[in-house]
Amino acid sequence: MESCHSGGFAGIASAHALGECWATLTALPLSARIRPIEAREMVLVASRPLAIVDLTRALEEAAMERCARLGLRSGSVYDALHLCAAEGADAEAIITLNEADLLRLKPTIGVELPI
Image 1 (cartoon, rainbow, N blue to C red):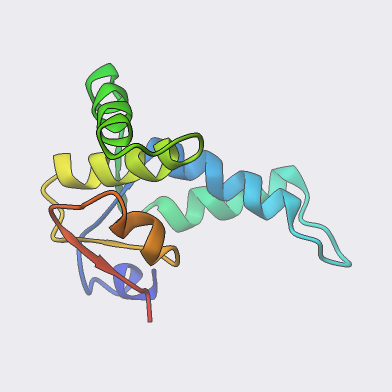
Image 2: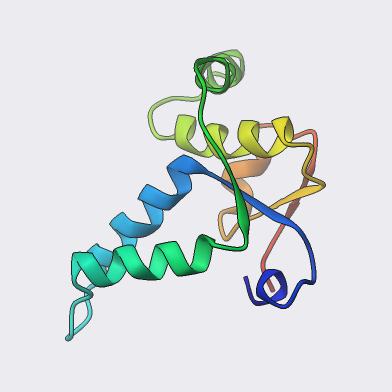
């Protein structure tokens, strides 16, 4: 994310990623919990330099088709949504901490760790 803020690259994120970030921030088991309004502000600030890809019916269908074709179930569709959004936006790579989850979706773009 720091590279994006400093102009190191153009970044994109699916609209769904914003909600996932908010959900994670508000669920972190910290002694001083992040309040929902604070999490909202954190997500909005962090996403400002990003192009947000709205999820269309076509993207949702592509994600389900990919999972069905590969025999994947349940929450794998959420990873597929991020991947389909990135591929549809002609991204060079998707950056994730869940490399194995993305690789099982047979991406047509690179899969990279953030560090």
